Image (tube, rainbow, N blue to C red):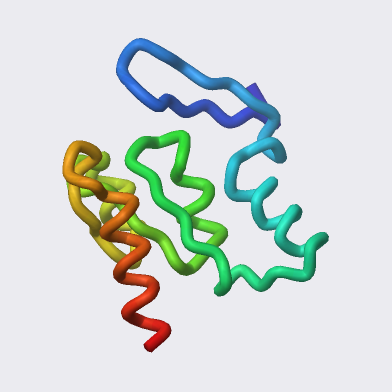
Length: 98
C-alpha cells in the first residue's frame, strides 16, 4: 500500500508504519528540533526496522550478527549482541574524540 513502510525486527514480527514514522526520520526531526547535528548522534542497529536510521544518520554501528543489508549500510561494525556491542561502540566513539 502506498505511503506505508514495512519492516521487521525478528522473524516472527512485522512492523507496518506510515512512511514518515520511521526511526530514522523521527530521530532526525527530534535532533533538529533540539539543535543537535546528525553527526553528533551515534546509532546502533541490527535488523531491517533500523535501516532508516542508517540512511539518515552518518555515525552508524551494526552488530556483528546484524542482517547483511544493515552491515553494508553501517559505517562501523561492532561486536555481536552477546559480546558487549554497545560498550564497544561507545569506546570506539570516545577513542575518536581523543
